[in-house]
Length: 482
Image (cartoon, rainbow, N blue to C red; front, side, top):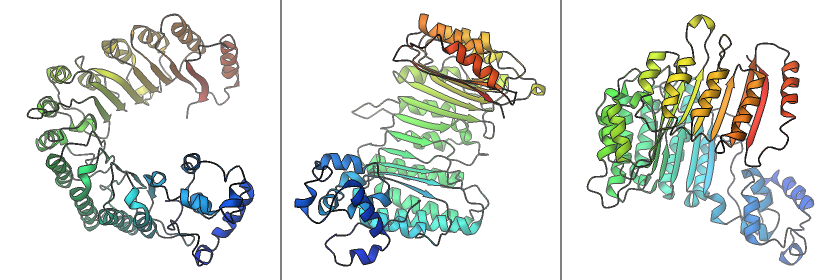
């Protein structure tokens, strides 16, 4: 976290100014800037800011950082009382890097102090971790995160949304002792407070199989004991990258118990026929039927992705979950056969994102993807994002044809080596045939250091399209490919 947290104090306390020291300058500066005297309610009501209704002040205060909120709390009694509104403290973001600073509190003290003072209001918590490179830094991170969850448990924080991202527990800096301590603390918190959670994100945790199954079991058990509330679960990169998660039958069995789940994000290494079957039958025995609505899969070269999944399993899942939307992200899978095994025609694919950086000597082409695979989803695809290093092959005609055939395409993001004229043709397609396509982002790669000539061409081309439809969000740029 960038700034240390000092719990808000009563402005009538005579020790306030002594306790905050340097904060007094911020108080005077803010008071002068906003023309609020701060001596009493009668004087502060005279100024424009002092006469604002509480609801307006709360809206403004939501945009302030913790440090600026502390300064605003010292301006006057009116602001101090408004700053006590629980709605201002329902969400918070912590960024832990494990580094020490002589200018602020340790991350442990800062996190514990914040939750001790305001945890009773906290409903949304995001924790992002900078993966440590040394064991000493990992130990500080473990202390900060464990202390945070322990204090959340003690104050019985009413959390509904929890996000713990980028722990990277498979890194050598995380010793066995630190990993076990951190996971045990997380499990203890989930046992006591997971029943109220409606959304959980544990992406890039990179946990081992046994501990990962225990975390998921505790989460699922808490949902079974109470009315199922958890509707969103993000497990991208949750398991360690080399694990063949799709071979473990416990994962589908545990996830099946999350009866209220409507939005699920997984690494492709978890996908199996058993998993798809688990979501087909998980509603049996429940009075209120809840269907899986959004299924996001992240497939990357560094994780297992060669398992065989039957198209009939996808077809059965799509028929048992009306309106299911599948979102697929593919990173550096530059093998046509593997892509064909992933992009099965039975998938109700609505979003496809792909990053593929490849050199001419790798003997791979994007053409089969554009001409044969993606057209299979012409009736369902709504979002398409491609970032390609196709410096040795032209994709302009195939890309334009794909845009034409996709009936429901709403958003298009293309970063590739393209002709300048392709932008004009793309706009022509949108203006004459594609009324649904209302967001277009094009970045034209160039191998030349100097791109002024291409930029001038693009500028001249776009000068004839000064009056685009107001609903169309369009952007095009030429940039040097690094």
